Image (cartoon, rainbow, N blue to C red):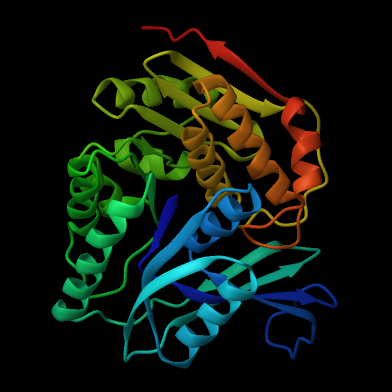
Amino acid sequence: MITTVTLNAAIDKAYYMEREIVGGTVMRVKKVQNTAGGKGLNVARVVELCGEEVLATGIVGGFNGQYLEQMLTEDGVAHDFVHVKSETRSCINILDDRFGSTEFLEPGFEILPDEESDFLDLFRRLIAKSDIVTISGSVPKGVSANIYEKMIKMVKAEGKPVILDTGGRLLASGLLAKPTVIKPNREELSALLGKEIEDVSVAATFAEQLSKSGIPYVIVSLGKDGAILACKEGVFHGKPTRKVKIKNTVGCGDSMVGGFAVALLRGYPPSQALQYAVAVATANAMSEGTGNFDPQILNGLIEKIAVKKMKIKQ
């Protein structure tokens, strides 16, 4: 079973607009799509769509929290959350022809020390049932600055693989515990290293350096350029061999995490794991949903993802 963690869950509201956005005016929404949101919940839906057992956990609260759990149940995703009195946040993604995707992300509620302790107690119990754990996204106000470092150490103490997908101080702190997998995007890797990621070769060099520092698998997602995977077997670049029709890029990174978690669970070798993860992310981009795709489209995409081993200049 793959357990996915989302500490800062949200009701994600996608607004599909009738016409291009015009500032300072009344804009009518053509269609609204509500989703149980947060990076880890996107991962959970992807794992379920890939046909593997998944459990979503984290912290939710209030009526929004109840609605979020209801939507997960309707999506067929098992869940076990800590409940708090505060209201789960909402986030809005506005989609229009001119600007594409514009997101408004609420900060979320503030967690009290005893609520953090309640979650860590639950998390400890869930680790024992898990084969792989993924930890994704931001955290609410009030939680310990090193909470991801604590959680990674808890998972590793049980001998289980753990995937970390976050940025900023949370990524820097989490790296201290040496997770099994990290998946920064180009911007997150650049911020972590304080260096510009100019192209695929630069991303590959930095990914290899991080892998040699004690992170078994370093994945760098690069948007239309696919993704890099650095591991002991080498550095690999995976990318679609042809252009696809993009409908919504939100959740592609989360889909890549879900796909790679599934590949690890199935024991795929690195090049095949990267191929599968990039195919899942591409299938998500071809869907209007977030953390969603048509499994038949995925099956047709896998062989259209080219993976090559790279030579890294020292």
